[in-house]
Length: 169
Image 1: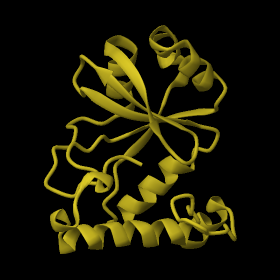
Image 2: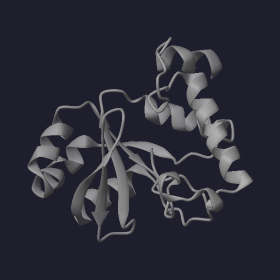
Image 3: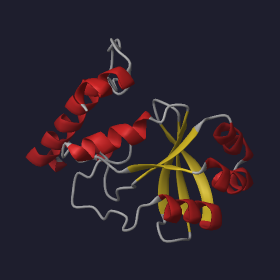
Image 4: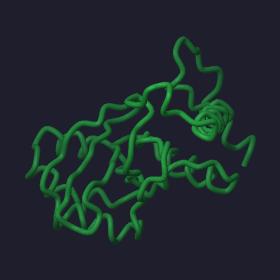
């Protein structure tokens, strides 16, 4: 996932498929691994409108559905949209051929709204507020309810994400 908006961050203005695809295909200057627990996650830096875009390559489009469901229930998570893999493939290959091969071997390219500011892993205990803990708790509870347990240590998944998603939507 993207950096958690712990403090008042600046969120990208226009976040739609056309704008994001255009920024990557026409203005991407670098791509770097962002880690991740499911799929391949990257930060794409651009000289375009967005500056940086968080993207993930995966064979499971559930991230888009999960983000829409979170928004429906008022859970503060970054927006997610599926972008056209074919439109960004040449640029990604130009920047990093190995990453281009990973993109071509997956079914989906998903862009997440990049939240500027500190991520939870870089903050000290003093920097967390009650609101920060509440937000993290809401996201963790939501992820657990839909079966997205990849961020929980020592947890054996008991159901598939899609099955749980269908139970609560």
